[in-house]
Image (cartoon, rainbow, N blue to C red; front, side, top):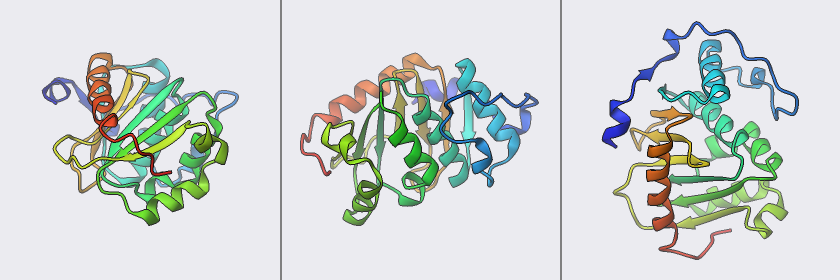
Length: 198
């Protein structure tokens, strides 16, 4: 993870960027994320749209929701998520669920180290059954707590959780080398347990 630390990290307070116009077909208007600072939304939107290679800090649950929503919404092929639990406050958020169900091109793999049956069932109820049947959304469990938790989208975009007990993380929308490294790590762990939990 040394590479991630070397990258420049920007906080929302440093951004003076203008609001990005909403594109036709966007799943949800950013006004639905009323608990997030406008400058933070602008910075995430700009970084995602322009594919900027720098790290943005993610300090809260609301930040995490908007960052993950943005990653899912912009995934073209696959998104891999390595986490401890399937936090329902996060992954069952209506905007995130809508982004998952509306992205027909995306395959989502979730690899969890300590999920609960209740969390998985709550999440499963909200996902379109066809996505589960076609393995467009799949969950596996692994007994491994040594790796940092992360999300990788299309071998380009990533979110690395810096503290496993909180929502503190960093996101980058164009660090291809780090994304590829994390994705390779994910795929090796994914193959250790072929059994799906949904």
